[in-house]
Amino acid sequence: MAMAVALVVVVLGSVLFHFLSPWQATPLASNWQQMDDTLTITLIITGIFFVLINLFVVYTLVRYRHRAGKHVGHRAAYEPDNRKLERWLIGITTVGIMALLAPGLFVYAEYINAPRDAIELEVLGQQWQWRFRFPGADGKLGASDARFFSADNPFGLDPDDPAGHDNVLVNGNEVHLPLNKPVRILLRSHDVLHDFYVPQFRARMNMVPGMVTSFWFTPTKPGRYEIMCAQLCGVGHSNMRGIVVVEDQATFSAWLKEQPTFAMAKAKPGTGGTTAGALPADTTQAKGKMLAQTKGCIACHSIDGSPGVGPTWKGMSGKPGTMADGSSVMADNAYLKKAIRDPQAQVVKGYQPIMPKVELTDDELAALVAYIESLSGGTPPPVQKTQR
Image (cartoon, rainbow, N blue to C red; front, side, top):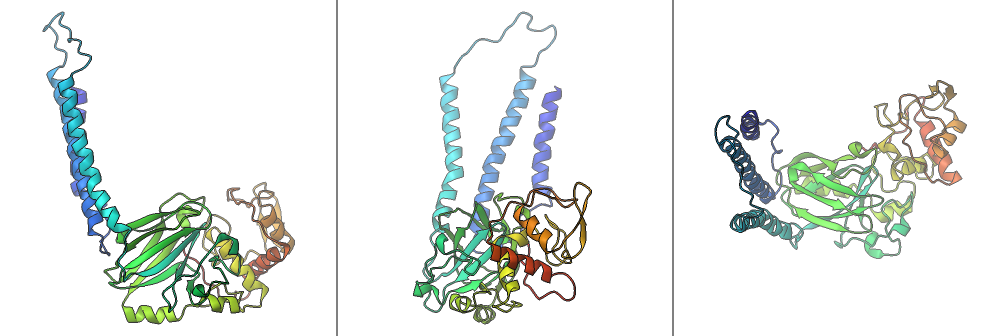
């Protein structure tokens, strides 16, 4: 009887928790009410099965429980199969699975077929940061390929494709979208499996290396919405965050005009498409800043003193630091180069030895160290930090 009572409590507690829970879905801010409806259908069907199956178990526990002094010597009849019962179970289960899958199939078919008037936005994921690209005046995105990827071309665009010269590059974590305008999202990954997810839009899709995946949605409410990576992509996964700003068409158009194009990035190879606060294109520090972004360093090392997966770069250079083995090391130019080349040789106290080796040329290493050194002492150069 104790087991029967426990199951009844579990059923009642689960149902009450669902209706009284403060953890509800975020307010819908796109056209995908169908996603919410599909989730509701799933919850109703699985909820009904959950309640009925558990109450049936309670019934059998009570109905066929052992009773002292009754049915002495009685044993349950051996029945290896019951074809009638099996047919009922197969039929009910089939109907239930069809009811779960059918709505999702119809919604998914619409989810990946964008309207003809949708604007295109390419999203690039890399451990652990986001980049974005819009087509230019011709409405076309230029060709891209992994072989073109470099510190000066983090989007991997084909420099010989004229369609990409006017593409608008957003080399940072914040992107803007127009209100009530359908947007087709094209997703690429530079390294591992990622997932672009904005909870309020009810829209998400895996980003698979070597593939271009897509979906679409229409933002219906202005505001700032957080971008998350919904696939475990490494030690900095939880910091892979960004912002989508939904605004009216005029404000969006004004913002878009302020962003650099690929042609501008080629003319100034140190900027890599970065906008506000970029360092001069011909400085070593500018190249180091770009490397910090393209190699994913800023996902673990903050530049404003805030804590992260790794030590902050702000104020690091020229100051002593304590290692995990208790020794003290001066963070000078030589140490910084050694720490980047062989991060496991000496681990800073309080941090895990999880930094991978980063492939850099001697010139790239010098540029990255110069950038780190620029963040120490005096007023550091203004740099756009990717939020996580």
